[in-house]
Length: 391
Image (cartoon, rainbow, N blue to C red; front, side, top):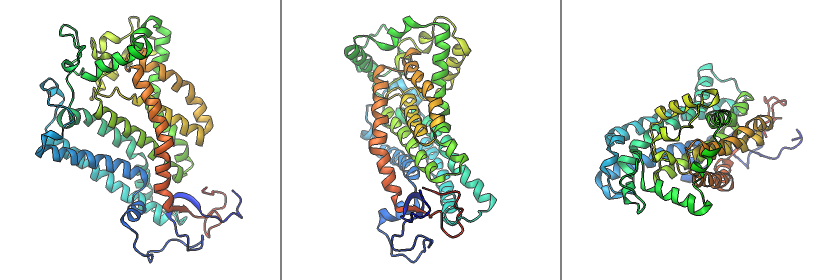
């Protein structure tokens, strides 16, 4: 963008003031905004997604104490092993809410008072901003680990015995649900084969190792999505990408609550789905570690691994292409690995592609609209370094 172009530029940094010159920083003398305007001015999109999701969970849990009929599914004693005290769940979610809110206020202060006006921030506030940037990376997994207790204790899990195809003599995992049998039958009806079982014929030690590496690549997806822009200190893009990433992840959590399913491992347990021959790169060891670390067992539909990795890939290709190209083969392998290793049904993977598409068709435009109330200072702004334009 040429330095002569003085049109307002979209950002997530400084409140838009169409009536003020581009070189004038925002003032507090503006007329009061409607409530939605005040919210957009004080909370970025990622804040709305995270705080809103946690607030809904807390509100639902509180209401469920007075009205048990608010459960999605009837109470099942077979899932008591996953339950916590409802009040402990509410308390933990409330702590997460307050911690994030405190970090959010400091992060927004950094942007308003220092970054936007190209002023040097105090060191402590710069560190607070970095913590705010990375907080969702740790914060959202905490919510994920609490979902098992939340689903069993608040929203409910449909018992596998309620499905017509239930076999009393079968070896079902203790977390198996109605939706596991339903999704298995959908796979067979649509594709003619049960994809996870069908893929076992292709298992080879080297291929199992490669598939496990691809599956594990999901865990670096947040860094693939935002780390290059963090290193460039392009906070506008960092905020937008973080909101997109958090949005698709939280949408998968909605799926887990609505259709709690364990995945193909519901038959015979995780051990029955380990490859018969040890895989390269410690594949067997990694499978055991992942299984032991798994707190929630109802995270099959949709495949969060596929949906989130696809979104991270598209974002990387858009904003830092070389990183995206390096990540591309891992994501391609991950799509196959989820079924090859027995973690997901084919239906989960298809739903993940749909969810990733929805993220860019609906969620991203909503994020852009929410943050369109902000605009960036022009690179020729007094005191702004012309060599570091924000556009």
